[in-house]
Length: 405
Image 1 (cartoon, rainbow, N blue to C red):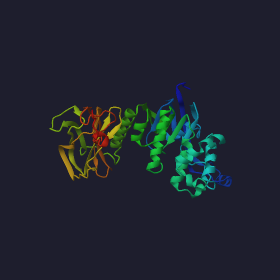
Image 2 (cartoon, rainbow, N blue to C red; image 1 turned 90 degrees about the vertical axis):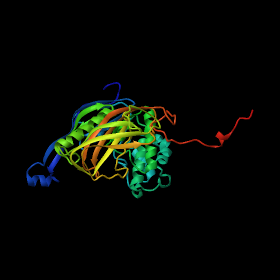
Image 3 (cartoon, one colour; image 1 turned 30 degrees about the horizontal axis):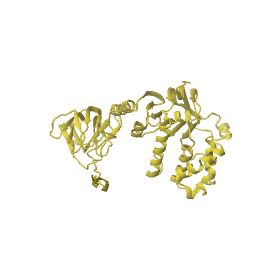
Image 4 (cartoon, one colour; image 1 turned 180 degrees about the vertical axis):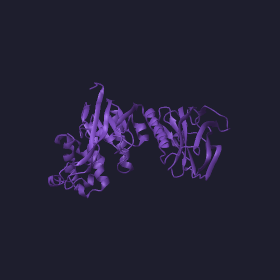
């Protein structure tokens, strides 16, 4: 195992049997006089990667790509058929929240039951008990049998137990959006705290925006094979571009290829006076102009722009549909403008892309990422921290005081 790695995956392969018909009993097997019919399915094939200590690592890919299987191998829930997974530190897994809860037992009893499954002693659980209950927001119901909990309460308790184990390595599978808005905020703050404390986090998710924001590195899986490992920006954008191209090649419904396609030709950044610029100031008037071409009519088109910060973080992605602008059809060449009267972006480097799809989003015609780079200099208001300005103003009695000499 690599000494710098919290999780090391070496040539891991995992297969499952897909049964066409299964013998349900010994009697059935004897009567049919043949073995059950099945075929082997390889969920993972020769996957190797290292997750460094203290990083947040994302696993992305289509459904069935092997993400969750790999995470379960890391958690030792599944054993690889080939290869080896090594971990350095205490592991906690947020996979199926509440797995191991007994419906007849109270929330209190299930905390101790589930916590012991996760490797905590009774003394450790007693020390963490109040924090677990408070985090889950179940103070009034902790002595109620969990069979009487709502699904949200059940999930919150399972999440709270797992997250308060204080692991060295946390494995997370599509459970970041649990509970109501207030609880989701608490979860995000908890993840940020774990990250600040140098914990290692491995996340499986289809929420690419969240992966881009949280992760230091990302791995892309496709049909059980590792296709790419790198920064969130390069892996996610490569993945999206590949999906876009593949859908077009295979005639999938999201993309319509051929002479009738609508295409994004280019994009311009213009000053409020209509002059091309590469530098702007906070507070400036700006026009983002999308040039398109449709060799045949494109019905109910929707245009969008996406502005990314230089580190790959998506800042905003407005569309004509968001603004309730409906166009019946476009044909030939033309352009559409997105005007911002007062640019709220704070100083930094940004990149802009554009997309064209139909009103229902069932057909995507074209998507161009990072077409053009532009910089923003200090303007008005003269702020530096963060990404955008709120454009607010300060007031209060303290500003009305005068110094008397």
